[in-house]
Length: 458
Image 1 (cartoon, rainbow, N blue to C red):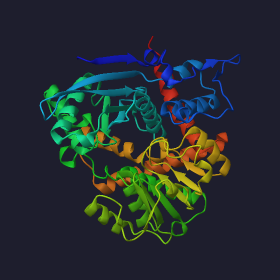
Image 2: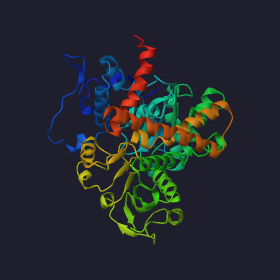
Image 3: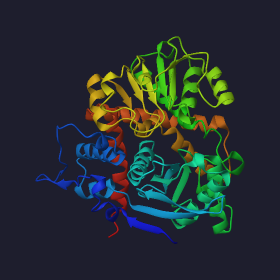
Image 4: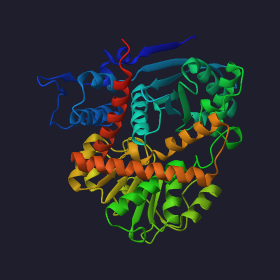
């Protein structure tokens, strides 16, 4: 297909100075090492998502005494696909958009991961998200590997017709690499159920039959799962519940600040508010709300539904979007974008529990600061796994042709997430590491075991 480039993982990463990678090599004891420095890390390097993922992977692999060969195999993506997509615009002109699909690991099953649209989509970001998906799926022990996709565009400036043509052409460009047994996309930033319906239809037209299980996050009428839309936020609330039990805290005495009020943040807020938590702060990209007595989330959701924004809500006072993160609270939930907690603000955080609803909201430098402060972190590769777990349920239901009630979905979800929280906590205690490294160790151990048993085809 015109404009397509496919590169295997090793070749994709070799010789790319922008990646800034430190290639691990065995030392005299057969261990893998990377160079380290106590010098301040430049912000550009601190906020690079691929470097953040790689640093945490290396730390976990070192503590696992991972075989040097497996270390190299698991550290890099299996495949990276770059496509240049011609799209006919509404005014008759032709534009070329760049799209990516990175497939990190097939060791435990088909790849799984979302597709995002945005002007800031980059290959480093997509490859980091693909690897995070591998570790997420392994942490909750579902039979998927990780993938991620993205297209560089500004969806707010595209009409519905342009978005549909872009989506269908992107699907056609990567079609030989996706499928129910290969790679199953899902919605992500700036994509939704309609986007997935277009992908499913395009794939089905090429295959000559309706294949609903090629994507998840679809409309229920096209094979979507009940409970899928709320699943990530529900999962955040389950993990916060478990953290409170571990720390002998109680919902009625617990204040919460949530950064982000999109799908994840709003459903997290509603679930926690329904359970009796006091939501004192809500942050968004263009401002924030604060009320020390608590915000009525049902009223706020109704306000947002009518106005499209949190602004003008009478139940809380306007607040600075950056300062909201450092207000006193028991639980802080970053549920929007990457790199919101960095070396610049980590020391000022006043939360006892940090539950990451977003992907990569905390940098590695900030991690060290928060660990010294004694913050109990529920890392992203555990904290936001409610979505991918319910996506797995959707894939299973599509393949069976038999669908569960929302109560059945939620019961299955809660059981898996509670078990996974306990698995990570026990790993943390047994290996004397923080929860993030424990989650990575658990995930890497599971993926390494599958890879070891399958063997390396060479």
